Length: 230
Image 1 (cartoon, one colour):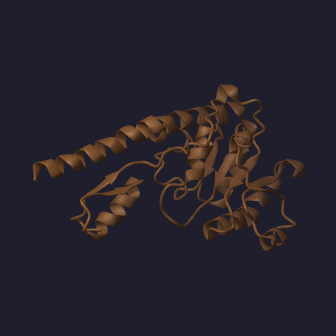
Image 2 (cartoon, helix red, strand yellow):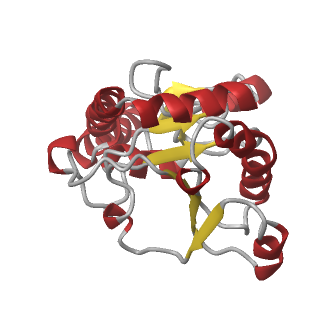
Image 3 (tube, one colour):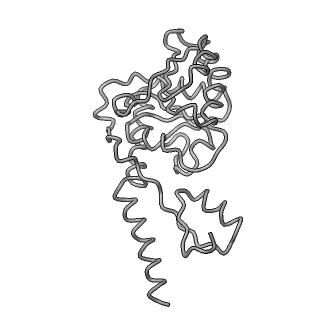
């Protein structure tokens, strides 16, 4: 990387990690934008706040498999103790192997195929992201914020997003806290609406196309000035 004039990362966490390896690197942060094919759905346009837990992701990325197993083994049983069984269904959207589906056939998990129109699925439901490994920006949280889907995540799961626990999401790193966070949203639509509203505002201000365009162009202009000065 030292051969390049400038390195661009999507998150400040990735920037720090690279600079720890080589302090001479010139690194700028330019956030990844909200995917262009995701429709923005403000809370005022959510037709129904069903507040069902949704997990977006496929089994092709192993941390997703770990996350789903953790939810099934540790979180769903705790939720099941406090609400009716038919209300304790986890919806999984993405490509999952039949092997994994069979392993979870006795769990309260409903698998959906990949949805190209995620904005028809997430609004008014809870996006959960129980990730404990990996780095980088979780695009699924950008999608959740854009779709007015209140977020429950882990500390690692929301790295790079700039989200704050209790302000625009709920952060929980134990099964007990994660279950309580989901139940808190299911029991309080005003809380769910407030967090979704703030997450959307933060998403547009930081990851919206105009915000990303301005940041990226500023980096390019700075690089160009370096060459002009030579």
